[in-house]
Length: 563
Image (cartoon, rainbow, N blue to C red; front, side, top):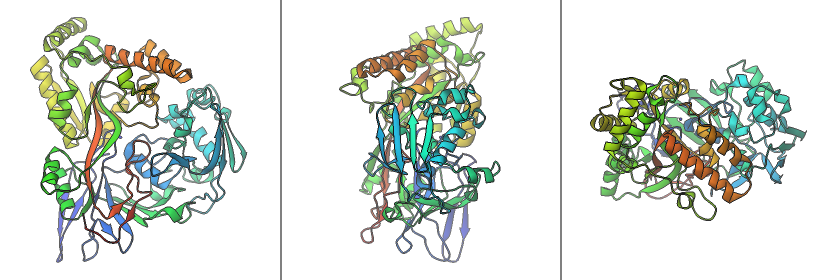
């Protein structure tokens, strides 16, 4: 879930002062913070909503790190991709599966047959065909592509073996019956497979266009082709990008906005709130400080449960102090998610987390967390000290060396990191070195294992426990700390094939216990969002799955108050 230090330059003009912010506000892997604000143009004031041009101005929390759908991993890129491209299926305004490039389909649990619509076109006017999906999926799975999301295609027969290099890409069990009919054979019954088809990794890419880019595919706007509701017209790296309504999109008549201008960003939540108050921002997230201001002004406050999980991930690589179980247990027994959530973060909507599986996941008849409660470790400093002493003995150390704690340089994240730093020093005498990085740099350091502990997060890609449980399978590319437990791996493998719902939930319950026993991670909180939105901006969809927020259904109310 990008990159440079916060900078703000004020430019004087005879009319006003123009705010320009460079991208710096990084984001968790699991949530996309998007702030809508004004971009002044020419001599006048540009407002958050431009009724005359039927457009809105927005800002991303950072520049999209990767708009190649075969290699993208972060929420910012997914947000953009969801607006400029489309898969076989999509989500409607109520969050239900809906036709995308496929107008209808048949699914018997192991085989999917989809009929593609004939009016689906690429932005250059050429048709979107079954071959475009097959090319994208085969290329994504090839080992040299190094896609960290290759695993999400593994339900397709032979996909995993192709990714492992033991079968050629042509062995993927996907067939173009003709240009507009696609057949997919699954390795095992996968009830949630249709929801996977909405995900960016399943988006199509046209081979001839991709080849012509000569390795620069998705590097700039001109290196991309679009089949979604918007096109990416301009992309000034680190500064701005513009999305314009795609006239060739098959459902363009139901896309109401003509333009979405992405402008600059500031990490300063108070500045963002001030801009909203001054009608320069049409939507902004609230933190504990700005929430109080919003309440005093009696603004309409909205809430949204993102479905994402924030957690601390340990580095389990040999030679790392955090590879020692007793050291992890010592930290576990003084780390209290309740305190972090309510006293440190202090943002309404967040819920303390003790499990890898968030509370919104369903069990057999009730929520999973009610049917299979997590075994919470006791918060007990004296027990923690005993584990710490055992860790020192096992590591042959008189003192644990300073531990590197990798975080993004987002203020809220840094605040929580400083709390953790202080907690470890007070309770365990451990020195924590906070490694603040831009979002993009944090992703790179996570991928290379350059950390002892990292502040991580994960937003669900589809509605099933496996979107979380797969993260800690030993061969998963998103298992950044290289956690490995043979029993856990086997449980998750069995869960992929188990059709009995109760037995499957029991497998996840045992997996949940293992993660707590091994202290593979420290769950921190389930992410909630509190925000204010311009009253003239209607139809913005907030959702757990798919790009969030979605402006596919957004429209501008012609009359009414400004906020």
